[in-house]
Length: 254
Ligand code: ADP
Ligand code: MG
Image (cartoon, rainbow, N blue to C red; front, top):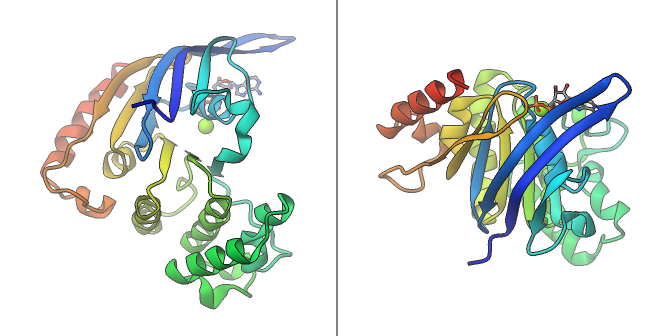
């Protein structure tokens, strides 16, 4: 099966007057359609750089990246990006925030509007469609940001520490929400996080990066005997601690 995303020997450094910062070194991996990949690594190792390369915002210095067989630079519309900051605009209502991407791309049609309305209803934001972002809880804001991203119907979702600004309890429930939404829509996703338990609770496979310049230290497929556990349920599954400890050791030897 052709992978949706393929990285072959990708290397990247930032060049500036004061010198070079080597961020990524010889990164190769593949992501199949429908897979949920978590990438973990120490702070500053190059995780966000990796996502910017996959999103086509940066160009590899060596190696190449293929999305569905061609460069991501020519198909940025197929990629959805979600960041730690939800980037909702206070001067727009929730509804007008979630339609923003479609509006910019001039893709606001009866069908795309219906899809948005359905998501707002399914994901508990319909009542708040006329509210301002500041009236929402942190978890609701992230759900609104996710709906805005999904409205563009991306083939690949890139999530850069999207929950790290939330308090622990909110983070647990937003993880469940987001994972449920992505699974129900069969979306392919790459989640970057420095939170090991988040990675183990959400992903199908975890990629462990070393310190900067990031190399791949380990790729760990996760198998839970009981299928379809929510991230919250995974946290109390028997396999959870073993995976957590394995990754903990791998990160701390990094
Ligand atoms: P992470 O997301 O894992 O914390 P980043 O990918 O943001 O790491 O950064 C990797 C390294 O590259 C860091 O040392 C960071 O300081 C450096 N870096 C990031 N962006 C730039 C930039 N625009 N110019 C120069 N150096 C950068
Ligand atoms: Mg980062």
